[in-house]
Amino acid sequence: MKPWVEGIAPYVPGKSALGSRPVVAKLSSNENPFGASPLAIAAMTAVLGKTHLYPDPASTALREAIGALHGLEPERIICGTGSDELIHLVAGAYAGLGDEVLYVRHGFAVYDIAARRVGATPVIAPDLDYTCDVDAVLAAVTPRTRVVFLANPNNPTGTIIPASEVRRLHAGLPADCVFALDCAYAEFATGEYEDGLQLARDHANVVALRTFSKIYGLAAQRIGWAYAQPALIEALHRIRAPFNVPTTGQAGAVAALADQAFITMVREHTLHWRTWLAGEIAALGNAGLRAIPSAANFVLVEFPESGPCTAAAANEALLADGIIARYLAVQAMPRCIRISIGTEAETRAAAASLRAFVERAA
Image 1 (cartoon, helix red, strand yellow):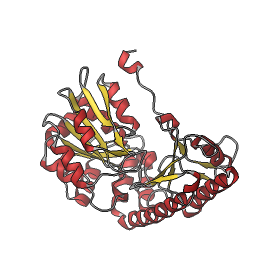
Image 2 (cartoon, one colour):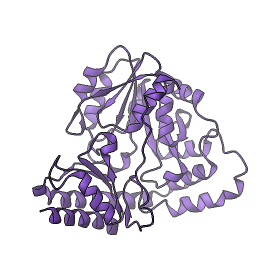
Image 3 (cartoon, helix red, strand yellow):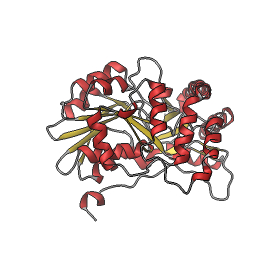
Image 4 (cartoon, helix red, strand yellow):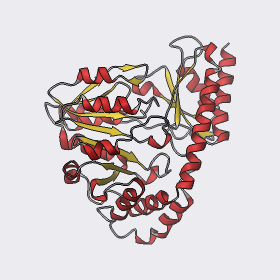
């Protein structure tokens, strides 16, 4: 094993089962609680008879559908096995031994893995209350910095920086440093938001990353996409896996893009219950609980470091009630639990479980 591979801590996904006990709510992986659009399910079902054939290696119809919806040039779009593959492709094409890959503390766990996988050194910039500190990121840039990853909104914190700060960060980077703007949760953001598409059109060192795993409800199909100028896209194509997006996924994603009424419904539901859940957590503030302001489809809850209401104890209480959230000790955040927004019943159940836990501890 290469020493840089030996240094990788494998990604640990959110818990999905409770053994023989029933699951009341699985809120650990930021999934769409409504699933995929019925149009997407029908489209995937219609192509099941072609499973003996390799998929379109260029994801042509899907790139054209993405381009049509967002006003983008299809030839500047690349599709991947989730945005995870695209993150690895960016690191693989632009970083290696002796280089640095920079991201923010409490950033997406895959950035560290992607950097180490190619022998680059991960560099972590300090955050500001779980949020990207642009000045801290720019201060961490060195002549060896080859890639800067920014998830905005961020996972697992849900925090966001405004468009002006995203542009300021990009403007402060060297021209030979790739700025990878990871917008997996773009559809849940509000206000002054920068989705990176215009930045990527205008600047040769920007790549905007997106996914179908969240609001589109196609996590099982593993579909991501990226947009950048031709030279950058060509570099990613050189090292991507062939036939990397399945036929079912391509068909489902094309149909899902056409059903924007479904996407609007999911977004409105998420924004409503995200606000509601944050309010329920705020009501438990006397016990030391705090909801970190979120622009994604989940709420990060911070608990006291010690005492009866720790995150570890709360996680056990949630599991006892059949509710699976994401306890983040595995990501060096032992005071935090991330709770995805589920259906109304699931979200209410999570809040009720936490309320009961706090009342018992009082």
